[in-house]
Length: 174
Image (tube, rainbow, N blue to C red):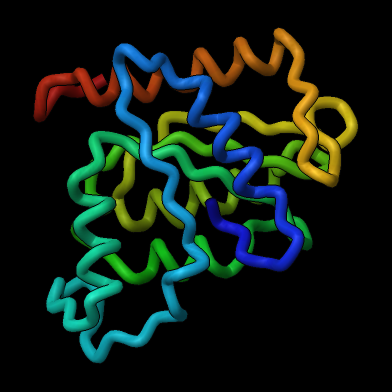
């Protein structure tokens, strides 16, 4: 989850999203970015010379994941700094990594997921799509989830798209 602010609801939303993944097909790990400090490596991420234990652990998490779902709120019409920081820590680990985006906020985080798509595209991640949860319709600002069937179906389709990218043979083109 990409929000680290006090009182955040990201953990509730991330756990709900994780619970929607088919348990017979997915092994899900929820990763909280609050323990990743702001970038403090000496070398550029593109070189892959990670020195700090937290960077090595984050690189291993991303590299060893078959796919990633980013759950993010929308703050001030974009995504919060901790997710940008987490992306910026790495480079090669993002290459062709299937990624789905789930936003939440007053507008379903459409600006946040659009901005994330652009940033993740720059590091060559394979963004398969996004969906958003809207405050008062799908989730309350206190984190109570009231997601309806339509939004659940959107998330299921997004997870299916993510799974299909994972199952594609290496080098396959769409």
